Image 1: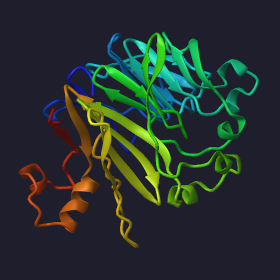
Image 2 (image 1 turned 90 degrees about the vertical axis):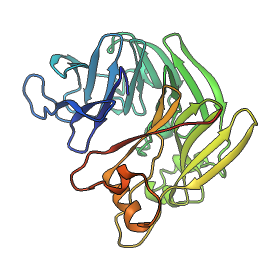
Image 3 (image 1 turned 135 degrees about the vertical axis):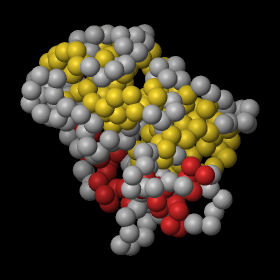
Length: 310
């Protein structure tokens, strides 16, 4: 969500740009092998300073640039390395979450989990040297970057420290003490990913959002996505609860209620699956009209904004 626009990467590998009223401004739907086309959208960012939307295509090892206002194709630029698992942009600078180095085994300058680049291709800053066991363990990470208005947070995989990023580097802000954190021996043993997600260990700290004095975060434990709320002013946790209901034989959506902070409000995308599930489970609940009249088969996702009392 940038420049009064909402950018959504959907399941069809499209980028859909909405205005703040939910109207579609444009759609980037360019799967293919020709000019301006991509094999897949492995990650994307909006560079506000340059007015560009940048897609990383892992298969073509390339960055594809589009006009962030109208979706028009601009250019393609090779990115042979790194091979990022996620990317972000703030004040014209690019940030890459670089979990693995399999594709450039001989280039030790890129054996770092966080890389920072001013032009998108030349890496000027490097943080968190790779641990070989972690780098060779292909665990599916959560989203390590979180936008909070003009602030960008980063949390490295399997870590509990939250960092604020800037073109000058990074600084540690918070350390979140999760219950029964995953021991590093599980990573070294390359334990089965699904078994880890269902285990009693906390894993995958992600989605760090701060609005006023309320800190929101997510992690997995016992087969559930857990959401936490911490009051920074009172220095105490005020909520931690499960957000995934596991029922045999039923398609279960994951409830990620908060996706970021925009103009002093939490915001989140409510998917059609989530609405359908909520209405079927609690049909008599006092939902707002936009939920009550929603058609999960045809309507777009809902962007919800939440006020936080000071």
